[in-house]
Length: 580
Image (cartoon, rainbow, N blue to C red; front, side, top):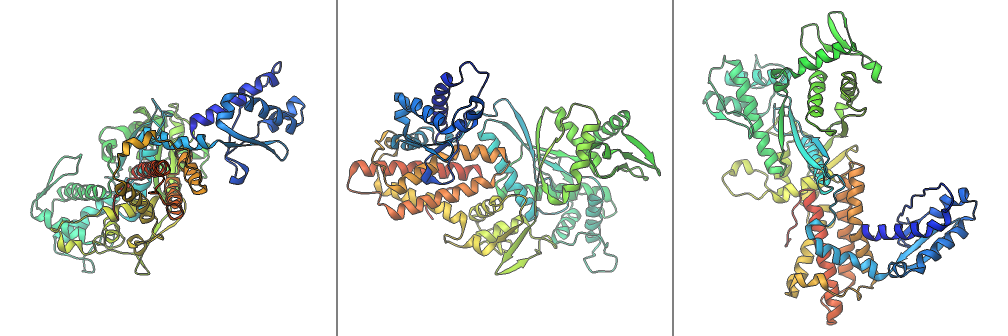
């Protein structure tokens, strides 16, 4: 049911309630729901059961009176075909055929705008995701964050929010120092397993590539950063560090480009120190009286804010623990005007939540409790040829996003033919669709063989084939697609048509529910269900029939279905091919 139709029914019930509640202080809220069992009708309302007790009336009799008032006017008769009272007073409504068919015309008129709203107009939201350390290529966990974060950002955008996609670079600390010493060791001719190879070093082939380019005195730059020119001096650890970070940031840019994910802003951890934001945050916490010195370290009383124990902020060596710059970073987010912030991170960050929120509460800046929101995702297991894949040559210890895209494109071995033209669209589509097709807090098995399969078992193929199938039917017709927006839809009376119409009408509500629950997986679920309805309809009914009126009505239905499939796929960053 479309939103205007829902509002019209609510208005009819509110009008029917006025004489019933006159003289009372009741201010009832009419809510409509879809019955769990479709045989009970199209929409259900329990307002009679809510009001029966305060009005001291029999709920079924009250329901009968409300239904009679709703159906008395022309508006009710044009929208509602029948009303039934069930159980202790549920009101079940069945919409007219014309009301159900209205979705086709609405979709064709609104096109790519169908499903959008201005719910969040004037509101800002920042979604931080991926935020990988620049110490290696992006792994499949980063890929899951990329798919989730980009789709969630798109959900906010279609509801009218002003969205900023942000990538936070942890370009400071022990891991960056380890990166520099790893590259230095390679530049000195060492490799993993050699005597003198640092025990904590990164072992992937990419370290050798960085060392080679450093010795060649090359210049590299990330998309938003200053160029870094290598000095070529193996003893110049600072030059190695800057070059390695810039090199890997550029590599991550290329990974994200292959994945179809773009960010509005990149924020560097080093800037928090350079701009004095970390020291300012620490000073604010000390001034607030929520810190204390013990054993040469500075502690934050996080237990005052629900943490299980107090946390060290500044260690005895004068360096800060990792959550302190996180607190400073989120203070900056708040100061930048983002009242709504969502962080998408791996489940290993669970312990960070309490201490970051405690620090934000303790600075007394008006930051609300529960700020920021977190979406924590669980691990991804990669299966290929029936076996789990745990490492890749590129990274040395894990499967990268680029591996997954190339494998799922059928482009394995692409490194050997780097100059050959490659189309990674298929792999990108599969990876993006698969990685948002489960709730973030569930573990996921990515089956490369399934991603390559051209069958109904492959969900992205199943959905894209529904779109391509409609394109084929419309191409066979050869008529003017624009004319279908004004076609008489009354011939659409077959049961499969009713199911497909109902599924199309669910799309706007589905988007709102997915946003409310921060669950972009619901978009993937919906697209697969819609594709299923389309395939079932196509197999049950001929579209290009001899009856001209029926043919045009069915073509309009197919056209609308294609548009909704296209809208949903675009939202999650997946292509909608015309041919498969």
